[in-house]
Structure formats: structure tokens, C-alpha cells
Length: 190
Image (cartoon, rainbow, N blue to C red):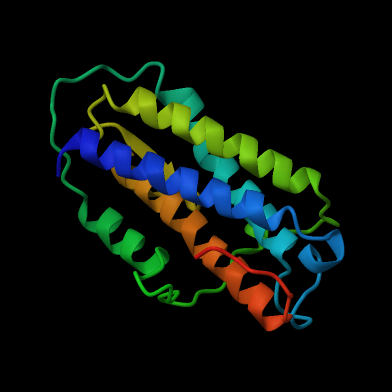
């Protein structure tokens, strides 16, 4: 795959995620904080989960990208693990969430989330876009980023971005599903 085409697609995906969460944030706090069931997250809890998970990658990008060497290599080939994990995490074209999985405790929202949770998420999406722009001149095949579960799984930089953004897309779809489950009387763009 062409590096710039991948970066452009990931930027577009991030902007769509940001727009969806921004749209959700216009709903009343009572709707955003309502859980469809005791063991299911509210929209705000989903956003807080993303804040927790995104922070790992943002810190890695902040640490590693400034020192990463520039590269004229224009192609990207997803790694075996990267491809597998992205496929497991990213929603399908029809909006189905593949491979249901249990969230590690360290990524579960543990606080009473408020609207500043959304503000942080929106700001973090802007940071992701900026890091993607930086990565457009780097070798996204050779630069490696440890996954959020630790350095036991190392992603190529291109796969780390793909996984992070696929994870965000997954939970935006979960937010849409929550709003349907609680019968929120809203019109949502798909």
C-alpha cells in the first residue's frame, strides 16, 4: 500500500471519529451517561475508555516520532500481527463489531465521567492527526511501537496507527449501539 494513501485514509477515519463523538456530545448529559444495562458502558464511559487507551499511543508517538529517521520509502506492508489485530478490532463495513473481547482492567473507565471527557477525546484526535502528518515522511514499516498491552506485541508504526484508529472506530460504533439500546430519541449520522 502507498504510505501517503494510508496516512490520508487514517486522517479521514480520525476526522470521522471526531465528528461522530462531537455530534454525540450535543446530546444531554443524562443520555450520554445512561448505561443500557448495569454491565454495559454508557457513551461517556466508552469515550473515557478511548481516552485511557489512546493515551498509551499518544505518549509513544510523542516519544518516538521526533527521533525517527525520515524515509523516502513510499510503500507500507502491514505486519502479520498488525494485520490480524486490526482485523479483530475494526468494525466491518456494515458496522458489525468483530471479535467481542473483554477489556483489560487498566483500560476500564473507573471514574465518574463528565463532559470534559469528550473535550479531552476531541483534542486527542487532533494530536493523532498531527502525528499522522509527521509519519507521512517516516518509514512506517521499520519504526516500531509497543501495543497498549506491552512490548510483547510490537506494531509497525503504520499498524499502530491502524490499530489505534480502528479501536476508536469500534467504540464509536459501540456508542451508536448504546444510543439505540437506550432508545435515545436522536437522529445520528451513520
